[in-house]
Length: 340
Length: 64
Ligand SMILES: Cc1cc2nc3c(=O)[nH]c(=O)nc-3n(C[C@H](O)[C@H](O)[C@H](O)COP(=O)(O)OP(=O)(O)OC[C@H]3O[C@@H](n4cnc5c(N)ncnc54)[C@H](O)[C@@H]3O)c2cc1C
Image 1 (spheres, rainbow over the protein chains, first blue to last red):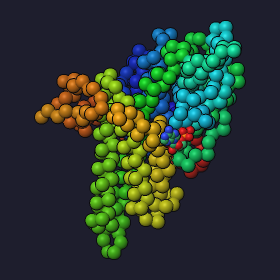
Image 2 (image 1 turned 180 degrees about the vertical axis):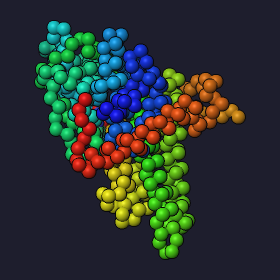
Image 3 (image 1 turned 120 degrees about the vertical axis):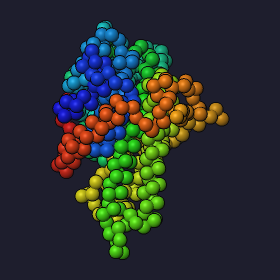
Image 4 (image 1 turned 45 degrees about the vertical axis):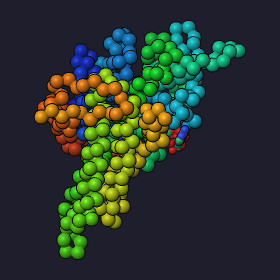
């Protein structure tokens, strides 16, 4: 964590006055791709922190929240994003965690699931639904709360035993009469749904960048191996079928990168990115799955052992087909834009 | 050379600012190139060995 902080990875979009480097979203995308080439779990932490936490507070936070939280988040505190629940992933707004208004704030009750960096984080951006008034119907009332890790009534559950992304945790959160002050509502009470949707567009672009980094790492590794490994008296890369497979993989990586960069640049210019983000994320997840799988095959038997980095890249890439929206959810978004 | 950034056919996209519209999408500005180079160097030299060791030992990053 100290290394990551030392190089400013937690403060990419935090304004300089709060100790960050005041860069734009495109720079976050470059940061995430660069880190993902080395480790996708670290890239994921840095991505969530910058796109969904500091970016969110910067954009939607009150002045007091920016002054209080951004200096910490730029230097010594990680943020995590908590929307999903065990029964509400793709259908995230079916969430059931409640926020009951009390004097000076809200009491949160319920459980959240799948929080990336749940154990490492010091602050959660957590979504809950306003509790129904006595005898009344529940309002939509989804609200975003900035919840301190040290809040009483908040328990971080045990990390999931994941297939990949081993360097960072994914945990549930349990809330039992967890008090959150009015000051810790991000945006307006009851307007959390729109806020989450705006954030997730950028989140998808960030994940696309992570997947591009994984894909590039797998390609680099496979190319290096194809240049070194000999079979039938010559290097395997000299076989046209191997060279073509790698050429196709290079094209897939570049396609995903261009869609990702395009979406990020659109976001920096304040454009609508819903469709561009969905296209970038879906292209990148398909690419990462296919290129990392090819990476294993190019390595032959060695690729199927845990000594070989190719298998780690494959395991890490698979998560990209699930978080920030599955294939079907991206296609649903893109189809919506076709106005069929 | 004037190359337009790929436009999402589904979105209403404003033209890019002058500083960018002379660049093909795949070309980074000097600042972006330096930024990416620095991140990549740190990632490979410091992050990769650390996380590989952590993975072998079954450890995750410390809380913060
Ligand atoms: C490693 C990891 C990290 C995560 N990190 C976070 C995080 O930091 N914060 C957070 O809030 N969440 C996080 N998540 C949760 C993630 O966003 C959800 O797992 C994801 O949205 C899918 O939801 P689900 O698991 O409930 O699957 P479901 O929604 O139950 O989906 C199961 C399958 O059904 C399909 N499906 C569902 N509905 C439809 C439909 N209407 N049409 C067609 N197909 C459909 C899906 O595409 C999928 O294939 C993480 C998940 C993982 C695995």
